Length: 189
Image (cartoon, rainbow, N blue to C red; front, side):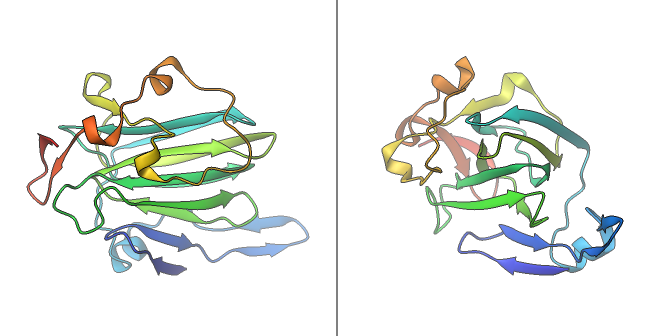
């Protein structure tokens, strides 16, 4: 597999080695020893999958006191995947990365704890899967506003048409509770 570093500390793009022939393809979506060799020393405790239609935007979500690291990928369709650094003492605080994940490119993104995460579906539908380093705790979840001008996110040309009420009510970065890194304790900015 090929591992690409990004401008955001800890965020990695993984390109699994894919084997294809007339029958289709095969790749390892996760193998602990290889991912640890790549610097992903995460203990994943929960796997999630969602199916969404074109124009759906989910996010930007994070858990404040029980932050989740995530390994994300698409098994069907295509999404623009986004991570925003919420580690207050990080040199990249408030900066983001956006990458196209699809069934065709098999790319994955590893997002360490301390980031908000979301995606927008750019194909007719998409099956989105992710491994998490902590369990989902709805009472601990926070949502950044997906179109906060301070974030300067470049979403796809498709204007998100389908948003949950929770995502519509997201808060601006300047008002968000964020992480005091590296001790991970939550702090109000």
